[in-house]
Length: 210
Image (cartoon, rainbow, N blue to C red; front, top):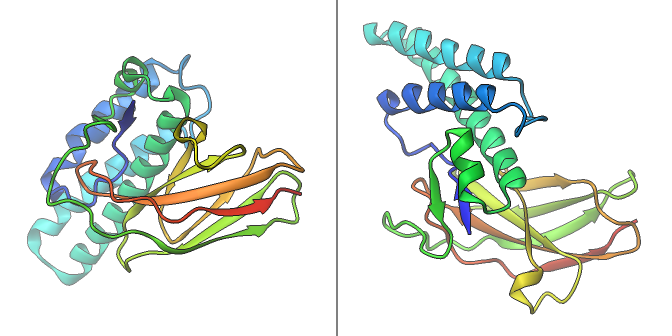
């Protein structure tokens, strides 16, 4: 199975613009495949342009311009994470579909190495939502702006084939929707490294969806 890379936090500043423009152009050209991205390609282009401008202004090394550059980078990384997670949801492991998006990919059966990911998320727990068919999963991360993959399962959690990708998230929580009321939901979480390498899965948590 293949996944689009969603964590770009380890890339140098100069390595963000080119791939971002390529992703924007390819997803725009293949809108028939990517019909409902979490932000429009026009909005994504605006985020990229803001990054390009902030990076250029920061060359003077002034404090205000460096702060603005850091904020613009955060916005771009978040946009890439959201779009990459969406692409993974659409592709369901298909490399050809990921390539249509312009995102770099990696093989989850042979994850890239880059020093490895030793951290395993702790204290994974599920909370019911007041909205039917929804739930919130929370976990204890490592304190960084790392990206975490969330998988769900509504069958036997001991069968690997029953787990499916739900998304990539930061911040130690993910709001899950589109769930089946009355089903027992299992969730597990793992950290994704900056080059696509993955850590171990957390202990699964479960809850009955309302």
